[in-house]
Amino acid sequence: MHLGPSAYEGGTLRKSRVVTDPRDTLADVLDREVTGYAVFESQETLLLDAEGRGVVTFEDGVPVLAYHTGTDRGGPPALADLAVPGPYHVSVFELAAADLAEAHAAEELRVPPGMLAERLAGDPALADSTRRAAPTERTASRSDARTDQSAVEAFLEDEEKIAAIREQAREEAQQRAAEWGF
Image 1 (tube, rainbow, N blue to C red):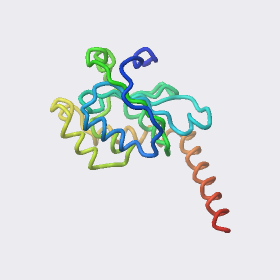
Image 2 (cartoon, rainbow, N blue to C red):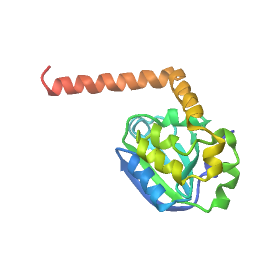
Image 3 (cartoon, rainbow, N blue to C red):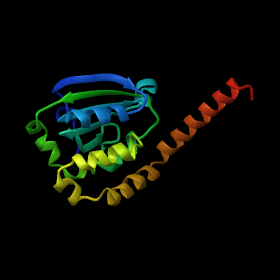
Image 4 (cartoon, rainbow, N blue to C red):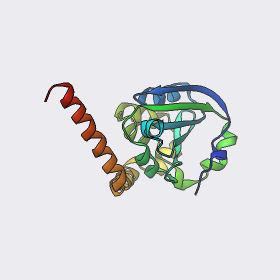
């Protein structure tokens, strides 16, 4: 299912900033019990004119779905597309739950409640807090462990993304070596 821009435009802008770690944004959304969506633009998009943004919707602070506009993938594979080194420009919008109902009906775009905190922020404690805040039917109907595997598989199958990460790591290592006189 394609989640076009009209599906995630609108709402009231609550926050827009560049962050090095998406953890703070995710924790804030959870604490404030935001219903709406966040748009994540990675440094690749910001600096290299790469295409695509990650869109994550929330209901009462708990992630519901994820979609990547550049790859047109949703669910756990979209998180694999978004899981690149920061910084990120993040914009958080509040939107009525009724305005998200149609998008939230798309099962193929859904993500388990704790997956975003684990995959994007690397924070198991935040993932546990998110799972506890999720409605029972969201945590009972889908297992994070079962879909975690599909996110890992999707990431590993994306040779271009792996090559880009390796290249970025190589460039950073060369830069540090030059700084340190090696």
